[in-house]
Length: 375
Image (tube, rainbow, N blue to C red; front, top):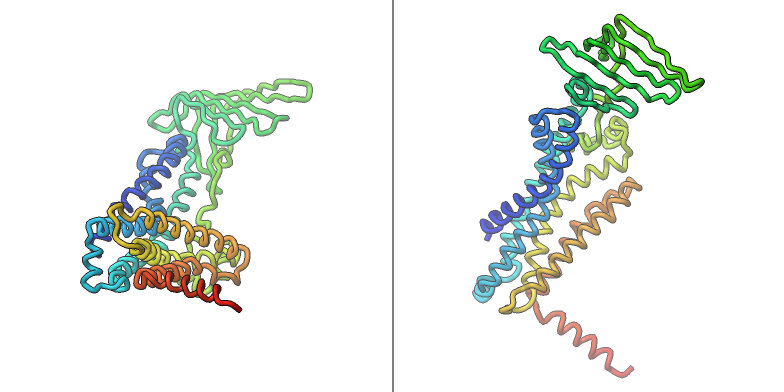
């Protein structure tokens, strides 16, 4: 059974990752290619988002693989044969528990190592790209808008790096709109690490709204700071999601202070990494235990499948509900483990029901008989 669970888990994980990943990649493609980035930057960015996508789909893939395999075993009467030979539901659930633990280990590697590392690297690369003026501005024959109110155009870029026939319109101030044009221009780094464009043999046109007057100024050379034309993320800026789990365990308050987050966010991140692994275990066991309910039917176990799906939705709703509470109140962090506890309780109740099919019937009859007795 365990090998079947792993094979189907791999299939569903591959399908779900492809769907989520392509959705992210399409949006990233529009943004990066629209900014003039090469294709290899797009491939690098999409690869860095992959660990996060896998972390999202692992519990769902574990649930789907478990339900699919169990449904096939039930349809082919293999479960019935195993139960007839003396295997109890608790014994049958043992491979599922091992399968869930394997998926939980995968999730732990993702949440504690790969996802924080990929997010940190992605943030650093975004900072580098945002500071790369040439990627933003050096595009021939195209009107670019690197910032609101700014229009930039270059007719030609020579192999030596000379910009020819440059046009720059700065309308960020409505009262003082300026248009620059020059035959040649060069990009230079200043002593402060900024980037300046030196325009040679050009014209500056300044429109004064007061009096509606136009001033033309011819210049031999003029320096314009273009560093502020490109929006930047602060290089090396940290986020609580980039922090190592050991740091969060040792000093969550210090991590929150260093990253500019609240203590609630740090505790939510820490306990979310731990509880996500537990949820993978019980997503699998709940799906399996639900399909053990009821007797064999030629029509399959469709109502059990729908019930299992409904229970998974309940677990995700609980997860969403407690997330908001923990983010508002740092002392409520134990609630992060409520979805896992609910999944464990569901599994135990479902396995008890499968082990003693007449338990609830006898319980209802007993209650009915007590209610019918005269006072």
